[in-house]
Image (tube, rainbow, N blue to C red; front, side):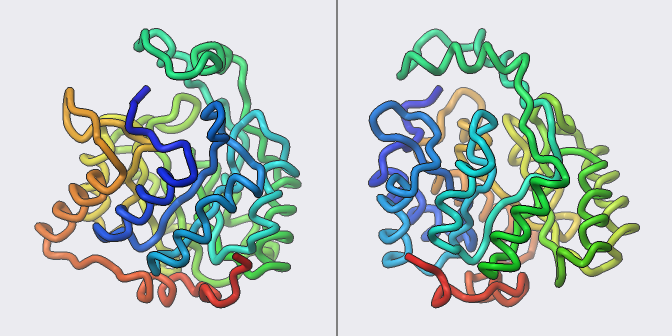
Length: 290
């Protein structure tokens, strides 16, 4: 849907390094097959850019364990298990991942699989059951020392997070990513964010960090609200293609720079990668298998 979306290893590396240079302390990463642009779980595709990132910047490399709703759990974990990153994303429940309305909004497609895939998502469930979550926590957390970006698409995902803390499978201060704007999860609405923060406060007290992700045109507005509330922000082309109305962002760095300006104008400072590692209790990049 954008000619600027990176899908080759070199382009992913270039855009991620650019985002770090503009102030991103954590890089949330996915891999793609450079032959056809499809989301990929192949460690070889990850190997195409992870060493470049580690050599060129100090940002925390955060590997997805979500990948794609059409991947199996074993596929989604293949690369994270091999590279043992400091941080992984982890969806805290199964949801309908309904992207099909987007199929009617575009006419030019780079790859022939894209439109049929979008149309099929009226019957697509991203599966992450409690058993799946426990497996990811064991493989990536207990065995490999990763901390997590806990992606919460709905109120019940906060209760699921509390459940795993009660079970002792999650320790330390959780980093919660409130996710808005995906059909099947919460809408990108200010009141939804206020409510999520209120529930998180009740469940976790002051022992958590939170960030806000809003898919689509609310990305910057809800990011600004997160800043006002003392939280953190995730921006980028995975969630929003537009720099402003009618203007495509040409890279992830432009979106990071725009959010950085919102943060600094509010009187808050950006966290460095070193500060992010300390706040989230990360194991350090020297323990990553690159």
